[in-house]
Length: 163
Image 1: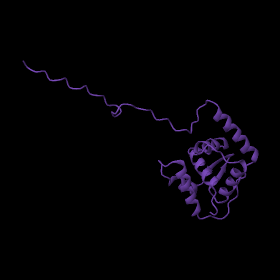
Image 2 (image 1 turned 90 degrees about the horizontal axis):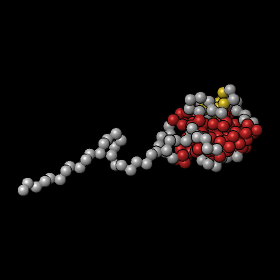
Image 3 (image 1 turned 90 degrees about the vertical axis):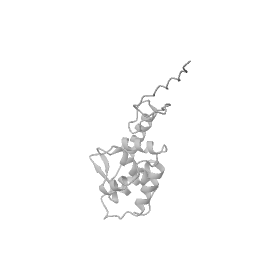
Image 4 (image 1 turned 180 degrees about the horizontal axis):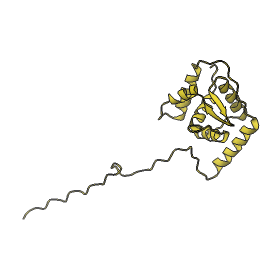
């Protein structure tokens, strides 16, 4: 697949995050894009990325929602789990550069109005105090050095001298 755009890798990673259990809607995809990088690409770039990736057989439309194809799931599954988002995007771009394209698939056409509406909904959700379910749980700051579930021992009493 040549050339590889930054938006393509971002869209694949966002779809991988948002469509794990079921096909994801545009609002879910925009929430994942916002989670990965705070600067959401322009509407036209996202629409072109949807069309480009679907032509290469990486994105499929299912009842108004979107999911990854088996080839795209293999790309996402090969990513290291503890890598930062920038490293994951780089690895996806690397995989896309060597991806062997199948015959042209029918493109997924996303209306600009749908993308604009999803961006508005995502911006409103980001501004509200509601919890984004795609955000990982914050880790608690534990000041004790002991392992979880272990009690601290009491120090031994000082030995008394026999007089």
